[in-house]
Image (cartoon, rainbow, N blue to C red; front, side, top):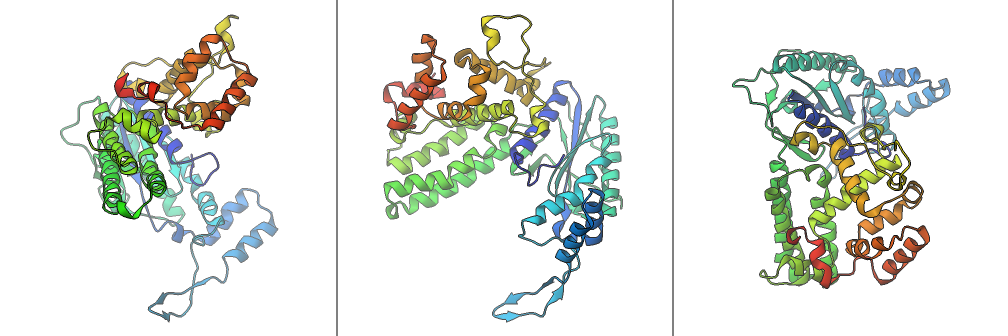
Length: 448
């Protein structure tokens, strides 16, 4: 599976799929091991005649192949340093860096590597590759992983791609299974041992062998604290509007990135992110340190981090229902087919898979179905309304007035689209993110 530079695909979808597979294996009391593969100068190592052969095998016409051959031909590069320009050097390998076609051509070049991992699962994100497998026996898992890794390396050799051994790591996910006293090493074809690690940064998210996300949250907290410190030291230079914009552009993206992945972390760890989030709000509002966090949310008109995570999570589920996510994610959820006609059978519900433990309930396939079905107890969305008004659904979830609408209008059985659009008009007219002090406790998970 290739997720790099494809519409609808992304780091989040790729990581969600791998994490779901790993948690499902742990739920079955299986061992799960992974190799995170790194290539040395991958884009610069593309051999042109092999790439042309790949394009030919995909059915490109002779005219297209001639065009691409000309596209790669007669390219030169030079270096400029301190005003001095080196002589031109012919470029005989690689795809043009910074070009629109470059990432797509590299994906075409490397995609067939996945076919070599017959007995293991593999996911590619351009040149970032994770190879993983699971089973009830640790020895069989490592044997299978080694065989698949050998096959992958042979494929890389055929493409003249070089493995970066020092950055290729192996990890055993042992959240529920006892860790072995000594873990056998996965080796490369030349006999080098891969390093066994407890943490690895995969597509921007730090994964750890316990799947606690402690390392990721620690790095995120450190980065945000550093930026907030800089902002506080220079606060006299910023207007209120500038502060508001700076936090939205430099702080919130760091807290939001991957939040649907690390949301399964413990409340103790997530509370550490709440603390830096509160500091960012104090920077904007000039509120003293003793101000309660509920009052901070009311002052700035922002929801809690918990609400932001839940909004993003429901957004992912909703896009899954709309088919706006990769097939490897949408295949993890199944819309329930009612066995008989009842009043509740009109509403969209998802099949909740059976799980054996707490770890299974953390997987995407379970938590997505469970989260959606819980939301449907209040929303009661029907198929036509939910699939023809996607932006309305998302906007309602993104406003602090959402819970107020649930409490006020749902008991009146108001589901008609024209009425909902009228409500949306009122929200837009008065501002989607208006603070609601009398109901601010409703949007604070710590005060429910």
